Length: 563
Image (tube, rainbow, N blue to C red; front, side):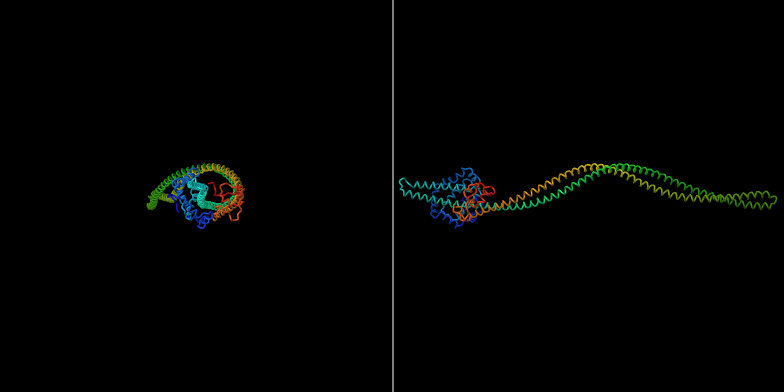
């Protein structure tokens, strides 16, 4: 049996067959329930005959069901939440009356009734709303049945006829009551199944949550202990760091003083480099002058060489002249000798000529002697000229070598001048950098002093964190103890879940049948003190200890808020 109207279903994803099976709604169970309240074939026939009564007064019956719902704000909200409009809901109500008076009350009929109970999941409709609707339906049937009985009896009817008609009306009313009661049993079952499922899910979730929290707290506790140990190490390290920072501050102060000294020294070095550059420049100029002078000396040496060559030529010419003179002297001497011989031959007449010949001979010999001396002097001059020429050649070589060396010296001095200029620039840069480093060192010293102070603060904070870690560890231990208490409460709540399962297995718990599990009922003094809104089947499953915990606030009953 499906939905009675077209459109979106109001039920849930669970099929009526699955739900009927889960709540134990078997054919045998249905027959037992019908026997338990005395619902028989006669009641079925009477309900089927009442279908005519319903059709004759259909509008009144539907209004009796629907009007109270829309007349009250809390129930009207349910209509607003429904995917069906008012007309569709009225058709569903007609369908309900039709099936109630349809004469067929088998498993298919009651499976369809589970759809009604499922409204609790979809529309969040409390159970007592259904109970009130059932009372309105029953009242409407009773009114029309009694109206029909009064119409059948005239003023002159005897007591027997009246009694028979009243008995007939009473039987009709009893059939409606039994039929309605069986419907409500199934609806109750679906509500209880929903409550039980949610309660079980929440209990399982509570257990899981408790276990997860327990595990997390265990991990946090271990981490807290680890943090406490780490903070001990951090505290020790911070104290050591504080000492190291103080030493570093002292060293930076010394460094700052050294840098200032270096800065002062760099100024002296700069002046020295400038003097070096100036000296090298002067040396460069001197080298240039020396090169000029050497070059002039080389030129002069060349000129002297040329003059020496001319002198050698002149000496050579003189030597030729001397040789000529020497030859003339030799010839004159021979002529003088010949003249002496001729004078001797002439005798007394040639005596004067002999004197002249002797004089000529003496002059020739003297000329030869003088020519020999000149020749000796020429040889000496020639030797000295050769020596001077050799010296001049050596001097030219030395002059060339000196000129080359002076040029190399000049090139080296050029390099020295450039290097000195670069050195001066570099030293100036070093001086500037040293000044900046001195300033930075001063700032760094101040910063390190600040770090030293902050390190001391960190050490104090580490001590505070370590102390807080100890407190946290203590608090976590307390939370673990609280979780153990919660676990006990969850286990107590689990007994309630088992009680709900017994309700599903034994429908007599919902029909007023006495319990047979040997449990001890709670006294009214405890029942009256329990919070409102706890379903009766849950109260029936509570033991005294759990009930007292709920009353004192030590335990809660999840899943049963106000509906």
